[in-house]
Length: 513
Image 1: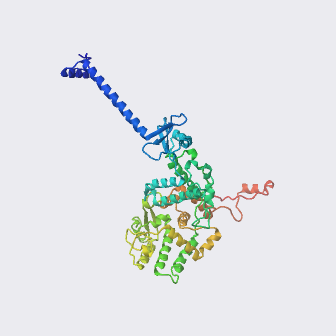
Image 2: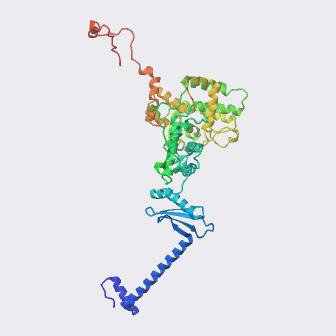
Image 3: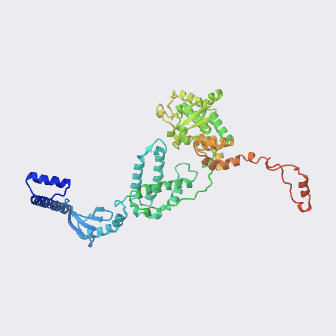
C-alpha cells in the first residue's frame, strides 16, 4: 500500500486505490502510461505545426547566417514569389513583406535592403508600415472629427475643425509643391519645415488681399502642423521625434496691441446715418434687398453696442434676449440682457451681456421681417438669412456674408478711402474692439468689461491699457504744467534770487493737488 503522510489528498488517493483493488505499483504504472500518451500528443502537435509551417514557409532560407531574417515562398500561392520575415526577439515584433520576385538572388538582395531599413525600426518600436503626408493628415482629421461638438472645450467645434482643415491644407499643398506628397514621412528631409513659413507668407491670399498674412496666423498654422506630427505620426509610431520636420516660427512683438483697427465714434455715427439715409433707400433695389440692408444696419449698430464676438452675434436667438429684473421702470422699457449660451461662446462658458437703448432696434428688426411676411418665433435666430431660398428655414447668416456686406458698405459710403489713407483695416470683429475702447473711455472697470465681453482681465489690460492711456491723455495729464507766475514762499524766493541760481526756473507747487 502507499505509505500515508497524513495529508488529506494522500488519504483520499489511498482510499481510492483500496476501493478499486489497486496498490502503489499499479498506480505508478498507470502514471507512466498517461505520461507516454501526453508526450506522444505533444510530439504529434509539433509535427503538425512543423508541417503547417512547411506549407507556409516553403523553401525557407536564412540570410547570411542570421537567425532573425529568412526568405521563403508561400506554399498556398502559385506565383512562386519570395517573401521576407524579420523578427526581433527583444521586442517580439515581426515584419513580413512580399519581395515581388521569384528569383532567389534578387530576393536575397531585396531582403538585405529591407533588413537594414526595418531592423532598426523594430528595435525602436517604430511601425513597419510607412505613411505619406496626405495619409497622415487624412488619418488625423478622421480622428479629430470623432470629437466634433457644438460646445467649446468639450471637443473640437465645427468651426474650429473647419479652420484646422484649412491650416493642414497649407502644409499638404506645400509638400505637393515640393513633389514630396508620395514620399514616406521618414524619408522627407527635416529641413523642409524651416522654409514653410516663408512659403506661406508669399502665398496669395483669398480674402483681404490688400494686407499681408500676419506672423501670428503663420505661427498658429505651424503649431497645428506640429501637433499633427506629435499626436499621430510620433505617438502612433510611424516616425521618431528625430525624423519630424524642423519648423521655425516668426518672431512676434511682445506688445499686445489690438489686432484690428477701430472706427472713431464720429465715423461710426456717420456710417450708421449713411446706411439709414442712403444705403437702404438706394433707387432700383428690390424690397428684399432693402430689408437686407435695413437689417444689416441694425446688426451693425447692435454689434457695436454689445461687443460680442461675430459668432455670438449671429448665434443669438430671440429667446436669448430678456429683461433685467433689477432695472427700474425706464430700464425695463429700453434695456435688455443678451444671454450668450455656452454652445455659442468661444470659451464654452455662458454669460450675459447687458445693453441699454436696444429695444427700439430689436423692434425695428421684427418690423422689417414683417415686410417679407416673416414673423419671428422665440426659437428663431435674430439675424436669419433673408435669401429667398433660405426663407422659412431659420438659418442664420454666416460671418462671410456679413463681412462681404460690410466691405460693400465701406466702399460705397466712401469710408474705405479714408481708412486706407490712415492705414486702417475694418472688419466685423472691429466692433468688439470699438466696444471695449468706448466702455473703458467712459470709466467702465476692466473687471466689469471682462465679464461682459467673456474674456480675462489680463487680456483687457494687455490689449487696451496703452490705448486708453493715449485717448485719455487730457484726464491723465490734468494738473501737469502751469501758466503765469508761480507763487513761492520766502525761502524759495530767496534761493531763486541767489546769484548761484540765476538760471534756475521756478518749480510748480501745485502738482498733484
